[in-house]
Length: 73
Ligand SMILES: [Zn+2]
Image 1 (cartoon, rainbow, N blue to C red):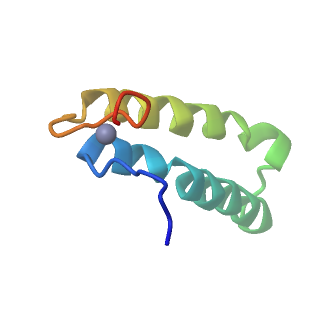
Image 2: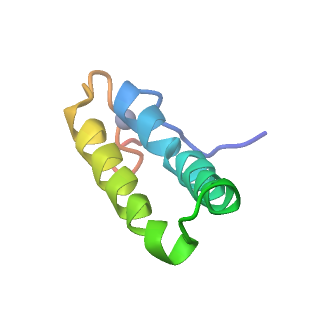
């Protein structure tokens, strides 16, 4: 049984999707390299754009019901 606390507010759940979104983005860039004339070296800034947009969206998400694991006893 895990005693690790996980907040389930919308913002924290959205935040936890960042890893999979980055993997999909990187995969899509390698796919684009296969099917277009663009090289990964030219497309990598898309990763920064996706990361930035994701962070802005995360900031805009409501944090109703957020429970910080550090202060929760
Ligand atoms: Zn939370």
